[in-house]
Length: 362
Image (cartoon, rainbow, N blue to C red; front, side, top):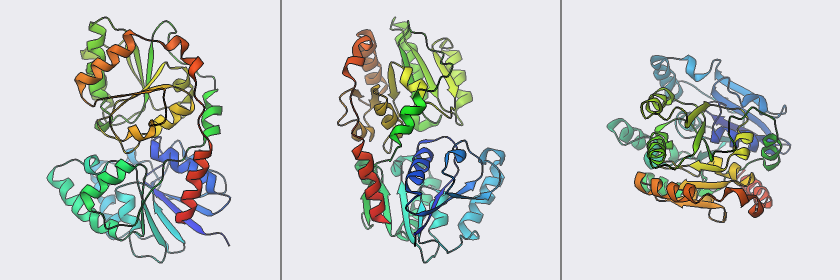
């Protein structure tokens, strides 16, 4: 009889952890009876789940259809009164925050928490976040296993919560063939072949440092180093970032394209893939960029583990000055015209090793 596994996540909107969960669930659907539980219904990735997979949602509307007060009430309900049916062999809280608190409640099931981000930074450092971290330490103690997506991810967690946990590092799984096939889809891409085109795929949140990227790009343009930047993704900072773009007269050079259900043709057609975050847990989008043989430019965060064996990458020191100098050097001496000759082949066996590792914890 197949084991019953309940994966939990906030929603199935476009995002790195969400894509990993969909790919992982689909890959495991023939070996386990899988249910994906979301706090909020909807999300572009919901329809990409295998038909074998059951879907449960606690609230029948997307998160953005609830106001701030309603979100507070929902958080309290999740913490104190919401219960999950105890009919699963394994509960997997696939994201930090509310779903981890909800899945920690008493159950006969084996409980696994998946950490995708730098816990030391993702919740900030104000009084509220300190209380939250203290509370969450007790929550994580209730889990049988903690999974991290990178060694640095694990190290950052241990700095905050200590080492008294059953821990394992498992890289993000990605459906290699799906990325390749979707990258071939014909979409209207606004790139100009005469320009150097940089693309990034990320949520528009403070962590991703798009505000810093805009400042740096404006300085490069003033110095006569021309390129165009395309950001795929959405988030709470979109309005303020657009205002910054307009203020710095970057409207014709720096574009916020919004979320795309299929970002892969945009990645494939770009000259460089950039992820210049303040911090990362791993950097899922870099795996996708590697599959599509892109030259990667990233900052010195946990992403270094993702590109450690990928020669077609540059890691820049994580300051505005160093990123500016690094991009200036790269773009001024651009060699993109011959990079196709140096395309690397990704070792797809490593993705199967990830699956075996996941199965081992079940």
